[in-house]
Amino acid sequence: MSKQLSRREMCGTLMVTAAAAVAWPLAVEGQAKPALTVYKDPSCGCCEAWVQHMKANGFTATVTNTSDVDRIKKQHGVTDALASCHTALIGGYVVEGHVPAADVTRLLTEKSKTIKGLTIPGMPASAPGMDMKPFKPYTVLSFDAQGKTAVFAEHKTA
Image (cartoon, rainbow, N blue to C red; front, side, top):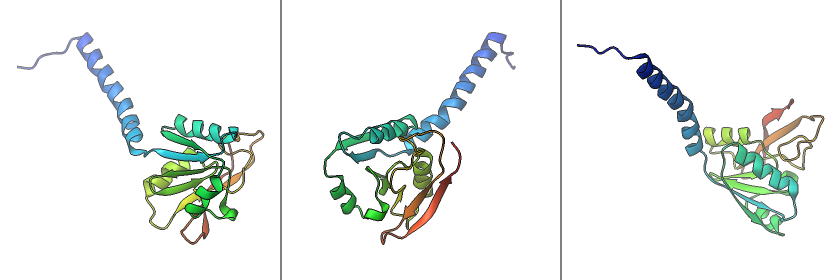
């Protein structure tokens, strides 16, 4: 014998189902992102703004303030041509500078064995943490263990 649901029971079931449908992808996405370790100069505000951008996009971050960021860069194969203001380590990769969270997520999802890291050399005015207006296009590069680069992403609009 089947039982007919009351309107209240049906609404409750629908609300629980809808909440689960929304929460599930967020929970899975949150679990998929390993912790980020960021090395930056203690007085750099744009680096802190980038860390906040990453946190706003579901990453957790441990920040190490150091006046010798160049030593960290050298240890992880970041040449002068690839360098920016801060260096981050995540999931076995190097992230140099103001790389958008979406590009870091893509790198972690694709799990490339040939890419050592991502970089935006210098400090592009419109990259996350810099956020200058009007928007100016910038390019994210991947690099391998030999320092060879390739275009990973092009950001042409805000």
